[in-house]
Image (cartoon, rainbow, N blue to C red):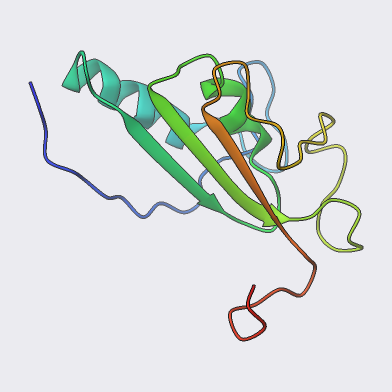
Length: 121
């Protein structure tokens, strides 16, 4: 069955919760779970995209979806080591823009501290 394109604006994304551990105030990776549920409901040929815009990298979502090539995950976050919000306990993997995951379905876009629309991100 083919569904119509759908958009959900969700906050909080629980993007730090991994399969075995809650982190950063996130207990369950609800957005990742919703992605897996959508794949199950829509069946073969379906693809889910998750866009996560936050000061921190969504290590939990990346951990949960990295082995499922039908889920594409993009994390737009502050560059680690920029003196801002990134903290190593949230993501000991320290992903950078070259980290695409084992199925090449992850995309990390790092922004400099203080980036905003007016300054061209």
